[in-house]
Length: 343
Image 1 (cartoon, rainbow, N blue to C red):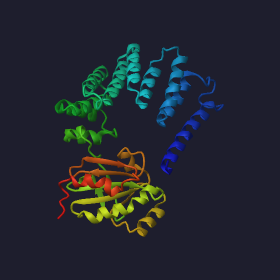
Image 2 (cartoon, rainbow, N blue to C red):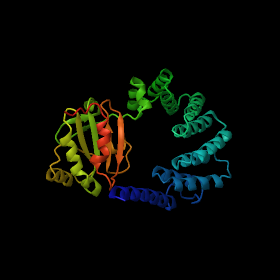
Image 3 (cartoon, rainbow, N blue to C red):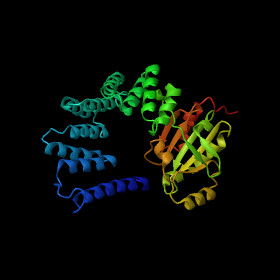
Image 4 (cartoon, one colour):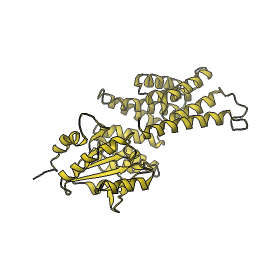
């Protein structure tokens, strides 16, 4: 386990400890309430869920449900969401069905349908028929409560993934109209302009400035094969891969291929000193706040993302293999790209 993983685990523990302390603290907002009340169990579950500790969250939500004698629809929905976090899709769906049976308002029914839609959408690789089931659930949610933006967003994605572009674009536009300030609007607009992006693994839009002062964006990389190298100086496997990365830079011409190293180092001086010492002459980007790291949904370093000339994600290479070097693992991937015509 590397330093990044240790930090993530520590952060989760701190969040949980802080919430438990605040709940138990005399004079706090929870004063006069039982530590084991459904409300406090839900709050503890929410804190655990936010920290991605889905097992703890599930336990707290079940406690809240038990204390409510099984009559808490909010608890039931949260139990279903915790099961989804644990990737237990069958339990997520059965619990969502229970919530749907308990629902007495249009809003509650819409929320239960939305949860079911998300569970089905997560399973389309296992069974293609799940995409139609996801659409049915998302459509039921958007019809039951049509002013909730996320229901239209989710339905739009499910439709585009099934090549129903016209209807999918309409749903995404409805989402944009209802929530123009939502952080997902940029993504929605990209899919409205190019619906095919929702069906493939396309890189998210990004704009960064390299240590050399050059602006780098997804659009600026189009026409080239690019490798994004997410690394850190405190990561031994990252450092060990450096000779292979240097070989890649030497092997492929700059007008066809670009390597971009994205550092997670918080100590910029250490990063800059290392880059200078090791003569890392290709584009170097500091991502100390992990904004780009999060944009790509990454969890660990080293991770290498190979981008196609059209902005698609061709491959993700995670970690290191003691049997094969990074250059070896990327060699076949890069050799198949027609843009890399070496002479």
